[in-house]
Image (tube, rainbow, N blue to C red; front, side, top):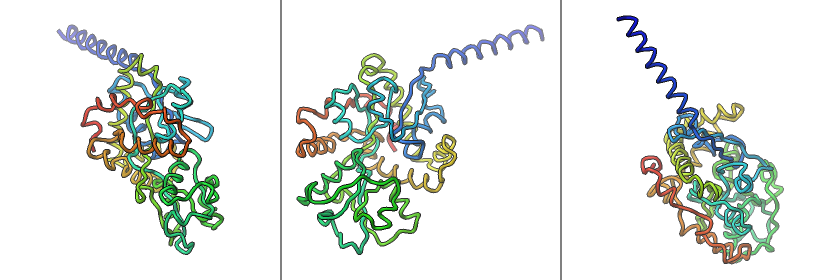
Length: 334
């Protein structure tokens, strides 16, 4: 009897181990490319991987860091990566104008992540006062937001000196420039942490400008040939981001496993501010990653008006909302 029972237990264990091995082998390998090196800006992807949300969708996801010489749009278009967290809709539209075969499937930030800072004693009270000043910005998309804000005050690109933003905030702190661009979840926190005071923050939304950002993109070929893979990745990612926003201490711990040298307090501040931008507006009413077509169309029109985008490039050609619409509500609604 004991021998028979032992054989049954052994057989059951063998079946279980075999099934687990089969499940592991069946997991589909895909990669996602980040905009920059590992940091809390990308917490949702690391959380989805760590907590098994991708595994539950049948995926084995590799999270690839970005860098100054790595372009997510190009890497996805070439097939080097399956997915990427890219720039704002302005970057995606520019890629479509070049006929790159990429499509946006979610928009992580519902509001403009960049803003502008000027010292209170500079005499700069509004973006109208940027005229004649030296302004630094990121030429990775944030410059488009700057020009859109300035247009509200009839200030043109030739009315001021626009220079590339430095890696650090030192030029602003040392008053080598009059106005600097800050990401609300990064450089602004750096200034505060360094004890810099008596400056004003000018936010795009305060002037009727909104440039949603951090577009999750995929190659058109993957959409056509493996739509279930696209859906699975988006399901896991939205679930990861919802968890990260609700459990920020744990999420930062997970990110720091990938980059142990990070400053924990800075990362906590980054995730806190990033989450606010993520759940703003449709991010709360509809869910994380929502595609706000009204805002995006306004961005497109701004680019067309400045003659930096062909009017024939439409929002519909750059975005495919069906995958986000199919994400279970409990995975994306904060």
